[in-house]
Length: 109
Image 1 (cartoon, helix red, strand yellow):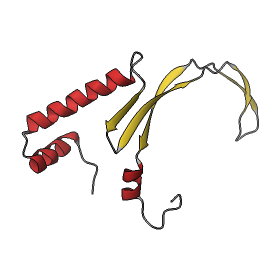
Image 2 (cartoon, one colour; image 1 turned 30 degrees about the horizontal axis):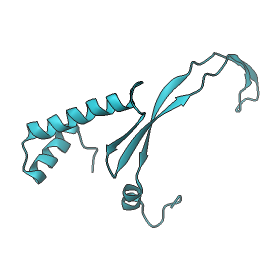
Image 3 (spheres, rainbow, N blue to C red; image 1 turned 180 degrees about the vertical axis):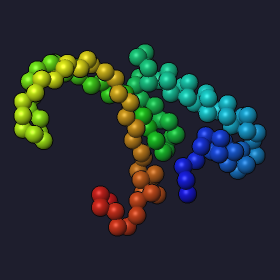
Image 4 (spheres, helix red, strand yellow; image 1 turned 45 degrees about the vertical axis):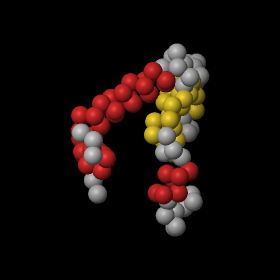
């Protein structure tokens, strides 16, 4: 099965719940706004995107100073640019979702 688009997801949910497509699309829009607010600078930095399925967290990556570093592939020393501190969004699947997707022969099971 190919990747589902937002329109296909909205249509599927609307059919299963009996709600209109406009109402389901409005719920997705509000969910997106709420996620941006919660994960923003003034929010707590954590948000359950789909409660019981996916959780998003903001992780602050530290600044990296400029300097000489060894390239692990060529073993040659090279100059690297500095990187500023930044906020990165990380997503984590819940155990329920992982158990539902995992197959018996999975390597990391």
